Image 1: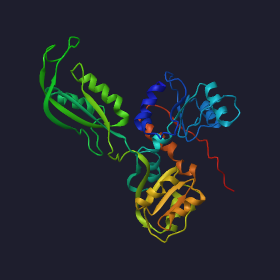
Image 2: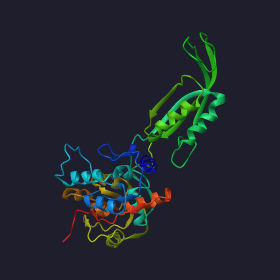
Image 3: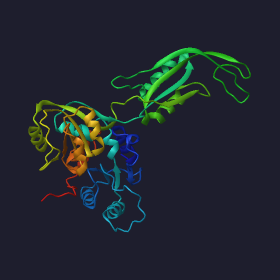
Image 4: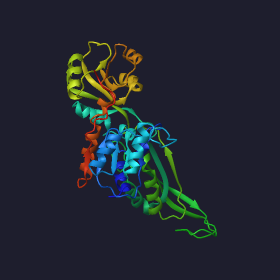
Length: 364
C-alpha cells in the first residue's frame, strides 16, 4: 500500500475538512508515493516514538496530535519538535496527524470516552456548523434517475439516518446554442425548449469534489447548469464533544469513583459537589473549557474534560459537576480505538499500537 492509499482510508474515517481551522492535520512529513511497511499508532510523536517506529520497522506514524503545530523557521535540532522532525526525515518515516478531524467525528475521541464509560444514547454536544451543502442542477427527464443514482453512489443524499434523499421538480428549460456549441439536443442558432427536471440533493462538504466530478461525468449536456449552496442544517454526526447517559444513575461520589476506575486515573480535579444525581454525562477529550456552557445547556449533570483553569470551575455555578481528569488521560484510549477501527477497515495490514507513554505530566 502506498502512503496516498492509506491516507484515503484515513480520510474515510476522519475527513480533514472537519478539522478545526487552527489545527495542523494530514501528512506532515513524507512522500505520498512511498510504500508503507507498517504503521505505528500513537497519541503524540516524540523522539522516543520515532525510535520505536524504527525498531518495529514502521515507516508511517499515525499520530493523534501534530508534532508540527506552528511554523518551523529552522531545523537545527534546538528543541524537541525539531529533533523529532529531523529524526523522522533522516529515517524516511512519514508522520500523519489526525487530531481535531477525529475529535469532530461521531466515532472519534469522544465516542471512545463514552464507550469506555459504557454510556448509551450518545449524540454530538456541539454540532459543527455549515458542514452540509446542497447541489441544484437541471437535466432531461430521461436522465434524472441515472444522475441521482450516480450521486447517491458517491455519498450524496445522506440526511441523518436516511440515505438516497433528493427532491425533484419538473419544468421547461430553454436555450439557444451559438456557433461554437456542440449541443446534445437542439440546433445551433435556434431556440430550444426541453422538458427538464430540477434535482436537489444535499451532501457533506468533504464530498463536494466527488459530487461535482460525478455530475460532470454523468450529465449529457455540454454546459451543465448547477449551483452549490451551504446550508445551516445541523449535522448530527460532526462536532465537538458528546452527551450521553449512564445505564444507572449514581451519586456524585459514586460517579467520580466510577470515572477514576474506568478512565484509569489516579486523581480528578472537580468543582463543588452539587448533591445532584448523575445520569446525563457530557464529555470532551482534551481541553474543553469552551464547552462548559454547551454541557449545561444540554442538561448534563457532569462534564468530563481536561485543562480547566481556576476560574473555569466557577462556571459550574452549582448547576453541573465539572470533572478534569487530565489531558493525556482523557485521550489515552484514542490510539487503541484507532487501531481497532483501522484493523477492521484494512484487516490484512499491520497497525501497531505504540507502547511509549507520551504523557508529559507527572504526579508526586
